[in-house]
Image 1 (tube, rainbow, N blue to C red):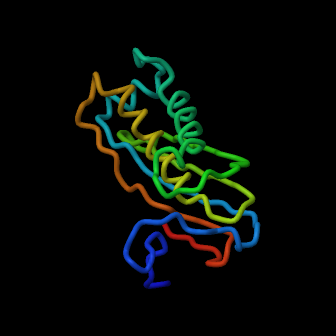
Image 2 (spheres, one colour):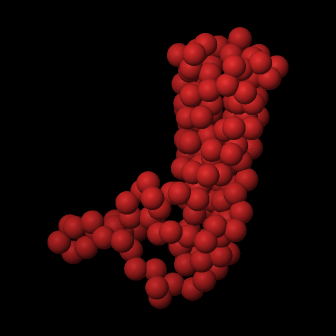
Length: 158
């Protein structure tokens, strides 16, 4: 692991990293998050009875859209030609929706930020669609769990 922050120049000013000299490689990243809620809220989601509609379907679309807009939201991210986004939202236990967002590209920089953005916006959408019945929901555990491609190689964690 490098001890040098890449988004600052020698004078400490924020800069966009120059990736022009890096090779084009297949890259992917997966980020996870979870939304913890009251059991009745998850039962409503499972039963498809939320007043705003299909909670998991809308959250899936929101995550996909968010991945495509990451460079508009995170100031120093490069706009990337995303080749695939997969958002999985799975009810777990009696009170949790587990979210996994996988983003792929063929390019000169990784897609970790796109995966993190997708997972977080999917989680925020679950919250938004259910907040009328459960304001105490918690979004937890946002993290990159896997990445591949590029000079730094592969990375995995749970």
